Image 1 (cartoon, rainbow, N blue to C red):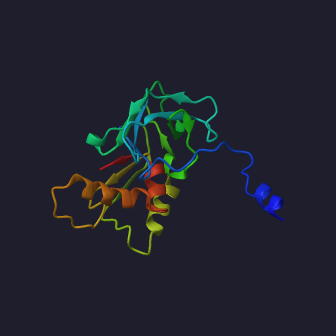
Image 2 (image 1 turned 60 degrees about the vertical axis):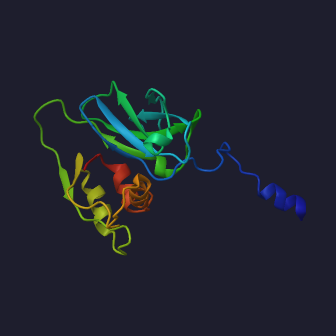
Image 3 (image 1 turned 120 degrees about the vertical axis):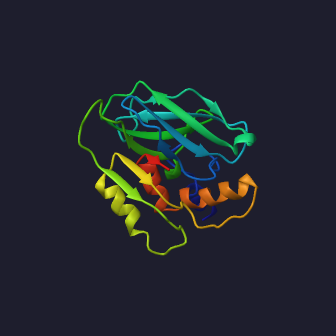
Amino acid sequence: PCLLSLIASIPVGRAQTGASPFVSGAWSGNVTPTSATVCIRLNAAGQRVRLAVSASEQLSAPLFSDAATSAATAGNVVALDIAGLQANTDYYYAVEVAGVLRPEQMSRGHFRTFPPGASSFKLALIGDGDYRDPDHRVYDEVLEEKPLLLLFNGDLHYSDLNTTNADDYRGAYDNILRHPVQGRMFRGVPIAY
């Protein structure tokens, strides 16, 4: 029985990646016809991070951003710029930390590059979200519309902070970006806030 339980506890088919290096989920923005930026907050300074981007959801033949290193002075948030993309194309991304493409959903997402000229597309406009609200249907409904860009025109959180401590504000954003529903929306469509 002991040997059987030992064998059953050995993970099969995926590399050991250890504890998650992320404090909260990724979000994208700064999208153009040929480039985009993805940001994510890590749990420690000094971590080497790259962005992998592919037109395939399985991330086959990815393009990689230049490496960035998390720094405490920036709250361990890294901005990963990727260029050389094709216009008007769906891209999927994942964050690589210390040479390992991370499996966590909070580090994976999607954006579509902008068309090169005049065209028709959808924009989503929402605001005043609260991660503590029990009804989050609107966030999935936004994703179902497949907008090119999300314009968030109100309070991203209702934490009502009255402090000069930047970490307090980062914590409020972390609550939104790691929320299972809201975070999925922010990983699924670029944002202008």
